[in-house]
Amino acid sequence: MIELRENELIVSTPDVHKDTGCGIHFQRTLRIPDDNREYPLPAGLGPFPVFHVDDFADTVPASWIEHGGVFLPMYQSEAMWISFDIRNDYPFAIKIAAGKINAVSGEAWHNDLSDKPQDYVVLPEQPWLDGFSIGKGLIRQFVAMPLGEGYTAEGQITGKEEHGGLQFAIYPMKADYYEKHVAGHHVGADVWGAEDPCLSCEPDMGLAPGGVMQQEVYDDPYGIDAWDTEAMSRCFVHIVNSEAFAGITGFRSPTKPISAREYENSDIPWFDYYDTEQKALKGSKILAQLDSVAAKKIKDGRPVKEPLVDIDEGKVVRLGKSRTQVRDGRF
Image (tube, rainbow, N blue to C red; front, side):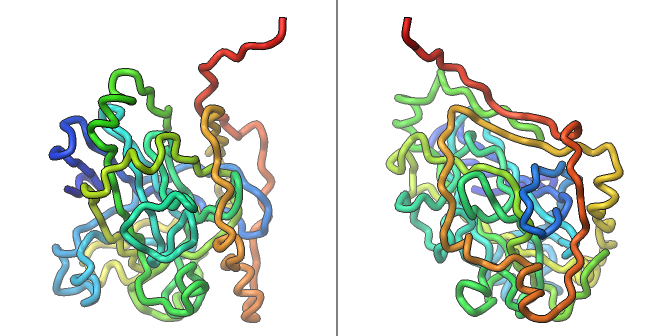
C-alpha cells in the first residue's frame, strides 16, 4: 500500500511483516551547470509539493487518470533529488524509471527485478538518488524538460515521448530472509537530509540528463532472491510544468528556484557522501551515451550559456558511513 502524507510517499506492506515501511521524498535542488565538470551534491532546497491525481480529475490530462498516482510541479531551471528512508531498519528494493526508462540500468520498464544488470536501488544502503547512473560514482542530474522536444532520456532512447514523469516499483525484503539475516543486527545508513521558455506549452514534463554529479549507486548486498516480488507496490509520479500548475490546481506556482550564481554566493554548503562498506555499480553504458540537455541544445543549434561555478572546498561537507570492520594485517 502507498499513501501520500505531507508530500511524502509512504509504503507499507503489513501482510509481509509488521515492521515494513519506507518513505520516498522529492526534494528541490540547484540545477548544477551542464558543463561536463563533476560537481558535489547540492543541498536540498525544500520539498516539492505533491498532490493526488484523483483530487484534480477534472483538470489533469486524461492520461493521468489512467495512470493514477500523484503529481508535482517542477521548473526547468531547477533539479530534483529523491531521498529514501525506512522504518525499523526493514530493507526495501526500489526500481526508479523516468519516462519508463530505468534510471539505474537504462533499460525499458518492466515490473520484475533484474540483477544482470542490477536495475534497482537498495534501502537503507542508498540514501538518495539525484539522477541517471552513467558511470561508477557518477550520475547526470534529474532535470525537467517538456515532452515532444527530444531532450528526455525516454525520447533519446525510444524515439518517442509518451510517458514522462517518474515510475516506481517498491519491493520489501522477504520476511523469512529478514528474520534470519537482518532483524536485530542491521544498522541502517546515516542520512541527512532564469527559466527556459516552455516551447511545447503542454503540462506534461519528463526528466532529462543534466550536469554531472559525484554520486555512487550501490550494489545489492543481499542478493536478488532476498526480495518479495509478489508484494510489489507501484506509483506513477507525473511532473507538471510549473507554469501550467496553477491552471490545474488553482494554487499559486511554487517560488522560482535559486540560480547557480546565487547558490555560489550564499552560505549553502555542498555535500560529499561516501559509504566505505558498500560496493558501487559501474553505471549504465546506455545512459552514459545520452546527450545532456546542453549537449543536445548545441546539436540543435540553440544557444547555451552555462554559469561558471567555482566550488569552494571549504563549503563541501563530508557525510557518510565509516568502516566498522577491523582489518587484520601482518605482524
